[in-house]
Amino acid sequence: MRSISVPRYTLFSEAHLLRNATALFIVTTLFYAIGAMLRMVQELSLFWPLNAVMAAIFARYVWLNRSYYYAICYGAMLLYDVLTTQWGLASLVINASNMVFIIMVAQLVMRDKRRAGSDPGPINALRLFYYCLISAIFCAIVGALGSVGIDRQTFLPLLADWFSEQFSTGVLILPCVMTLTLPHEITRIHWKQLLPVATLILSVLAAIAVGGAGSLAFPLPALIWCAICYPLPVTCALTMIAGASEIILVANGIINLAVSGPLLTDQLFSTRLGIATLAISPVIVSTSVAAINNLIRQVSLRADFDFLTRVYSRSGLYEALKKQPGDANYHLTVMLLDIDFFKSVNDNYGHECGDYVLAAFARQVHDAVGEQGLVARMGGEEFVVAAKTRDPLSGYQLAENIRQRVEAYVFQWRQQPLQVTVSIGTGNGKLGERAVIEAFNELLVEADEYLYQAKKAGRNRTCARSHTGDGLLDTAAS
Image (cartoon, rainbow, N blue to C red; front, side, top):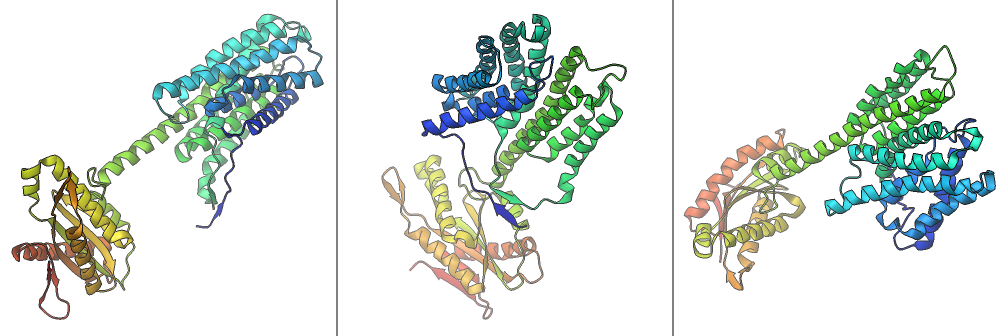
């Protein structure tokens, strides 16, 4: 599958104060302008993305939480109002309410990070829902007090408008910005991967065609399908787009909630809260799916690799062999390795020393094999190597290299050198039309027979079948 590499760029950097200040000023002004363009006649704004975007930025980049960065953000808001409105002193209070939401959400998210002791996952969807709820309440109180008198509006309608708008945009936008990541490369997309998005578009069109309050829930099944199929950042972005679109469509009468009359303020209030509540559902599903997938990867990793030696476990080796492509022209060499007199190491020095020897031995074998093959611990002091080789002799030489490497290595245990040797039996055969796993099972039996021969002949040797006749290849320590 062909892919296109995407250059990496970071808007904010802890070491660049001026760049951060400039970026904050530009982003604040940009999203303030977007919100201003969506202002309605009787409402301060239909959809106000600024607070949620800036709260997510401050929460995501912990080192931005400095008083001077907050001051730059606040100053950009005031400057925009000076240039575009006649609010005067009311602008100080209105924009202070914006900062209340931004600072409260950022501080609550950072509190979670401090409690975790390290950077947790990008978001906890349920907590973020409640953080938006709490911050929207305080923001609405301050904002409504500052807005009384603008366009002859009273406190309670303003409180409802501020709260519903801040809460809905927070729930829609915060997860998207906090999880936003640029892909390292862009790969070709198969048309089947676009089915959840196509369904989401059709559900919004159906909401426009049918209308009524129930139509707001039409996109929910499609969003949950997206949550199951797509990564968390993609799900959050689609949820934001769908939710914001519904709010704008309802406000402009394109989705008609009440056929008999025009849109009322309480209908917009209900619409915003309903969409915010629906929007958190796919985000929760997506975070749950991400957590489950991460847990599966961890469990798989523990099952596939031996914890002590960091090489494949027996089951992990079989899974890896199933994924190996067959090659009829190559030989498969299977080696069975047994550390000589390992029980005496445990008896004389303790099991802690035995664990050290196993781990150090596995490293030596792994380094000797390199990319040529796979190394696994079969159990106890017994290991196996499966390597593709050109011919039987090159496989035998690889086994002998391992034996010599282990014999030459000085195992140090508490300033005391230990002499460790290994006996190796090998099996070799051409892959032909056989699957790799099938050939491995057959050659493992042969390797076990020659390992027995190596032990019987005195240990610290490599034994294999001679492919030039019926004899035995047997190389012992000199």
